[in-house]
Amino acid sequence: MNILVTGGAGYIGSHTVVELLNYNYNVVVVDNFSNSSPIVLDRIREISKKDFKFYEVDLTNKEDLEIVFKENEIDAIIHFAALKAVGESVKKPLDYYYNNILSTLYLFDLMRKYSVCKFVFSSSATVYGQPKKCPIVEDFPLSVTNPYGRSKLIIEDILRDMCFAYSSLDVAILRYFNPIGAHKSGLIGEEPDGIPNNIMPYITKVAVGKLPVLNIFGDDYDTLDGTGIRDYIHVLDLARGHVKALKKLEENPGLVTYNLGTGHGYSVLQLVNAFSRASGKKIPYTITDRRAGDVAVCYADPSKAEKELGWKANYGIDEMCQDSWRWQSKNPDGYRETAKG
Ligand code: UD1
Image (cartoon, rainbow, N blue to C red):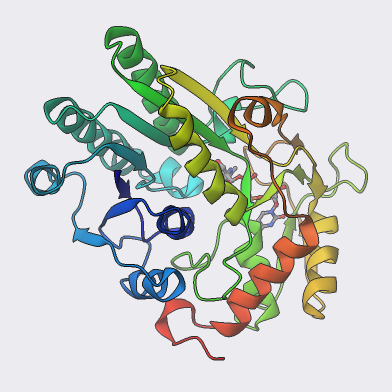
């Protein structure tokens, strides 16, 4: 089976490409390296000892994208490529709508033109907005608070409309909770451009001495220690979830939607402590104001994915922290430096 992976050089994309290669899928990667590096592709080959086709294409360039469909008989698409910084999306909404939505519309057009009927979409728990309660079940009401989240929800809505209109389509919408961790080899991991927005890359940059102190956004939430609670999930578990979703699509289920989370919530302070245990590094932190738009508690009910995909998260918080640290400590400058032993 030939799988087109958009954004395959990105954080979740690269781990998923490794997993697909491990399962002997033929993989075609498309990426524009907007928040990633060509080195990732070499690292994927090194880990998997397998090769795959790569196209440096920006998905908003439909002519270039069509070449990929012309030159490869694509059976299924896993669509990761997107801009994903919440704060930036508030300041530059049009960038987010052009990049995330226009590119996906082009992909849908080409999918129809070349009769590709299987699609896995990289969505986010952000589509649950401010959830009324936890754990979050897939049929909770959907709402968003920023253009990034809205771009995910709009694409989900388009997919629902498409599945209603075209009975030949099989679509899996995967709503990720908070991905952290890295490949066991320490060769690929999360490397955001500039100062990280998300907590784990921020913690690892403090641990490696690139940033002085972690700012914890609020300790006055109604939680066990006042800091926000999230469902952190190992990126390797997420990657495996995509392979399970592809297998599900072979059963022609139409539209299916799954939460990919562990079902367990950890506070920011619990995460910081787990990281310190895993790395032996003390993480200096200060408590600052709450970050606008943050919810107090967010964790998944992942039982639907377990029941219907036979998928459940295997890794616990300690291993997630160990693997994040292995990646960052071996690559203190991210992909700008070769990993050492
Ligand atoms: C964020 C996005 C969400 C996106 C997800 C994955 C926001 C408001 N939400 O989720 O839309 O889908 O990333 O990319 O940005 N924290 C700190 N200090 C930091 C960073 C974070 O205390 O420097 C805290 C946050 O307040 C939160 C927790 O750590 O309680 C996790 O934050 P983060 O990693 O940014 O993820 P989310 O906010 O859950």
